[in-house]
Length: 224
Ligand SMILES: O=c1ccn([C@@H]2O[C@H](COP(=O)(O)O)[C@@H](O)[C@H]2O)c(=O)[nH]1
Image (tube, rainbow, N blue to C red):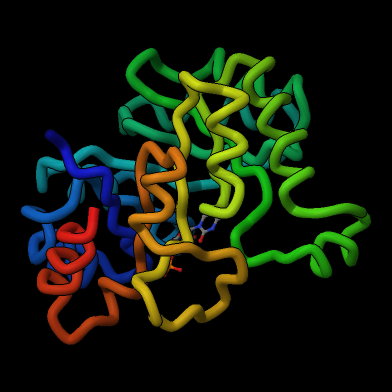
C-alpha cells in the first residue's frame, strides 16, 4: 500500500530538493512542492522532481478570478500533478472552472482555513466564529463545486470526513508528539489525523530539518 505520508519540499534550491527527496523516497508516498520551489524552479524543477518516481503534489494555492485560475491550471497540464491546490475562498465559479480546467489525472483540492491560523486570526480577516465552522462551510462549497477534496487541519478533518465520506482530505501541519509547532496553530499528530479521516498527511520541517530526514520519515511512518 502507498504511504499516506507526503513530504513538503520547501526550498528554492533544486539540488537540495532532489537530495531530500532521494533520502526519504522509500518512506514517503509523494512529494509536495510549494510556492517557494515553483517560483524558483518552475516547470523544469517539477519535471526534475518527477524523475524521482513519486506522485507530485503541486501546492500552489491558486486564488484569483475564475478565468485567470482556469488558464493557470491549463498551463500546468504538462506537469500532470497528482494533486493541485486552489483556495476555497476564491468562490464557487473559480472552483468549478479550476476543476474543469484540470486534467483527469489531477485531483483538485481546496484549501479551507490555513493551519497557521486560529480563531483570532480569522476574526482579523473578517471571519467570525470558529475555524471549524469556516472549514465546514468551505468544504460544503468545494464538494458542491465538484472538487475532489479539501485541505484542512487534523482538528476539523473528522467532521469534514463525516459530511463528505468520499472526499479526499489533505492534512498538513501535523506534528509528532512534542514536535516544534513553528508557525502552525492547529496541529495534531500524524496518527490522530489519519484516525480522524485524513487521506494524506503533509509533513515538512519535522522531516526536512531533522539531522537524518530518512530516519525522521521512518519514525513518523512507524506511527501510522
Ligand atoms: O493549511 C495549510 C496548507 C498548506 N500547508 C503546507 O504544508 C506544509 C507544512 O510544512 P511544515 O514544515 O510541516 O509545517 C508547508 O509546505 C505549507 O505550505 C500548511 O502548512 N497548511
